[in-house]
Image (cartoon, each protein chain N blue to C red):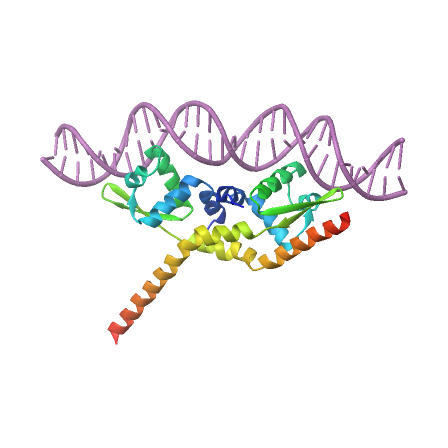
Length: 111
Length: 111
DNA sequence: TTGACATGTAACCATTTGGTTACCTATACT
DNA sequence: AGTATAGGTAACCAAATGGTTACATGTCAA
């Protein structure tokens, strides 16, 4: 599966969708209606958000009778971390050092 | 500084802005014009993206003469990871552990 | 089989977003 | 002083986004 990082980032960009992930984190396998109870918008709006989360592969759903149960899939988040975010963490201290140095240089120019 | 996670997520949601961060990762402290050379859009558009990155505190800039130099600030990304993303990773490792255990159990049943 | 419930689809709307062009300001170089 | 260079502001535009309402479909249970 070639995961589309852009879809994941876009999906994570909206607070309502992050809240949905939070709710699923608290209780996995909730139905659409169940998730709607905690969100102050129409069922259809919640469904749209869930669709985006599914397209980003952050949520997996299973139809069970007339209900559709939603499960968290943490893999894309982990992939984003290791492939994209992690590389910023390692040089973090060095970057801060460079920043500090740049500021100090500027201060020296003033005096 | 109470960092606004929403601004960070929104800033990271656009591929052009992630590319800007990537360019700064390769070479820190670039000027606006320098960054424009690698992006197929107007200088003003790049500037807007950099403004958003600054508002999200992902980039810090310093005016030096007539140039404005841009530096990467990895702190918000690290904070997002530890506060929000990390909590999804931990259960994932647990899930993998469970899977590993299940496989080992099955292997033991065979023997 | 009929009614209630859970989900799906479609049309529509306001606001945000990501880009443009045109013009303005500030600094450096001769 | 005058010109080139680097950056800033503003008005504008098309498309994407996040929501709505109205209606349709599928499933359970009496």
